Figure 1: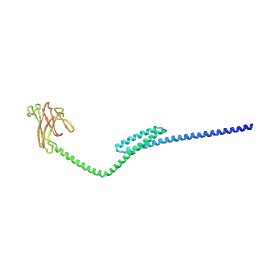
Figure 2: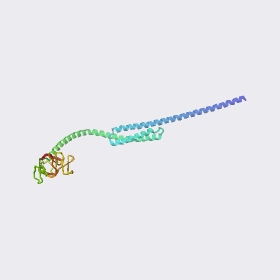
Figure 3: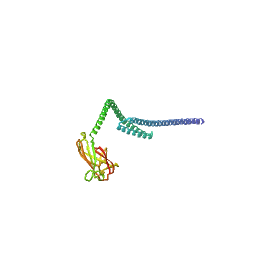
Figure 4: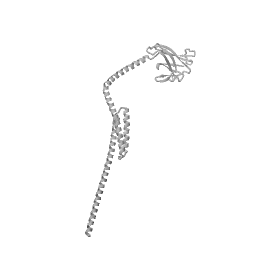
Length: 300
């Protein structure tokens, strides 16, 4: 009986040992599987992080390339187009930086957008290279043209200077000039008087010299009388004319026909105020130029 029991115990222990061994093997197997899965997950995570870093580097490199091209580009239109793409790259890069590495779908989308932007940049760069090549050819071809242009410019400048001098001479020659001037006080009966207190009109006599180079035709003579206190004598604030790009007051004006021959005439100022004692100035203007300036005295 004891031998039978002993035999049964041995069999039972052997069975338990076998079961334990099987269980141990199973546990070790699953532990290895879990470790393998964790390792795979870790490797995938590392790959995702690496993938994100690669995409970031590609964006950064592309942004640097844009910087290099936009610095030297001279074409305003292409500069604006490249600058817009540069801004887009910066925006995508910022989005990528805040995107989790595990968001594989969005990272793939961003990489696709990066490829699109890069293709656009390549097209623009080709245009830039084409323009630069054309400019290089033009610069090479234009060396002789520029030399001749500079030579021609110097000739033109010399001719322009000579023409300017000639125009100045012609302008001076064609400018009218008053060769004779006098002022006579007149009383109310238009007779000469030496009493300024009785003066009703001031008669200004003048002679415009002969000048065959001057443009003939209908002209307007403006007389501007300035008092001793430097105030212009005028009848109305609207009595103005243009002189040296500004409007100035005049005292009296007269239309006359100029033929190139000497022209003599008179122009009047009606005295409606008490004449100040002192030195007055009479300036004559025709065709926007001062053609004579004279002084006269008023004494009491």
